[in-house]
Length: 153
Image (cartoon, rainbow, N blue to C red; front, side, top):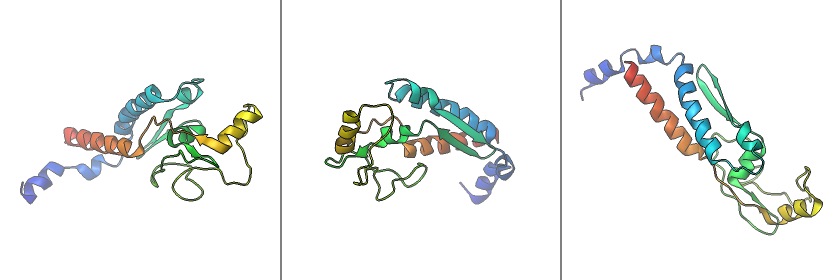
């Protein structure tokens, strides 16, 4: 392909990219559906909380806070079980290092769980239950957006 052919294919690309909301909304629905299908279903609260937030040029996926910890796991005080958290696209990020874990200052998780269960989680951690991969998600979005832009030109 020559430079001129490439320029012709790009056409009005810059003008088409000013508002990506329609394209992002299309792919957001598919991503949310896939995440919901793969999410842990103990109480269905996490699955039901997964949603997309789309603006003109941005796509965010939101869910209950503990979803990230379910996906990547949390190292316990006596056992390492967590997976590394990518630096891009995940909030919150681990306070130190690349993995979630308890700090060692006896701060256990809160909530309605019995004390013995919370203590066990503090000691043994939370095994990851992966239901999304942020890198794969970014690749799918990039490919979909590129395809839609080419189709529209």
